[in-house]
Image 1 (cartoon, rainbow, N blue to C red):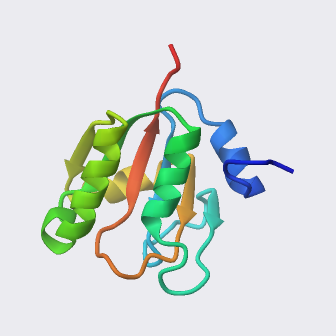
Image 2: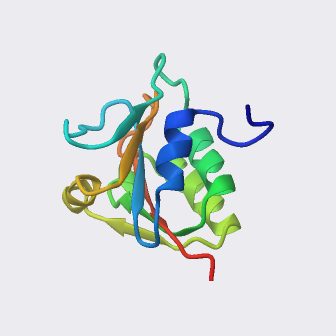
Image 3: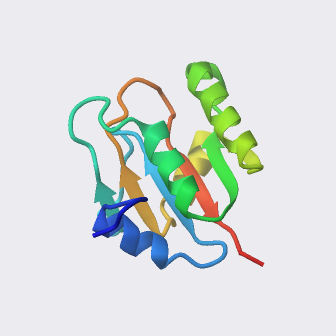
Length: 134
């Protein structure tokens, strides 16, 4: 039993398997996830857990060298975009905004997708690219 950190065994397993340049997606409740994709479904009820809490938890545990988000988030969910910008700026993580169609292509190749109960924001999913400790 862990004292701190991520206590979900599936998430712990998948995060510990990440190597440099591997990626993990934290998705909203509506994101289409292909059946072949490794996934951990945390969605419980609409809004729980909310996506930024999951992102913050992963950032406490993992080295992340880049975050990718759909460019459409700026227009459709500017409040969330501002929250993400602040979270990633505090960790000195660069953010790459790409068209949603390109984001979906990247999402199909992530090592694991973690589905949250995020129900409020549009285009709220984010892909974190694993960094290197040296």
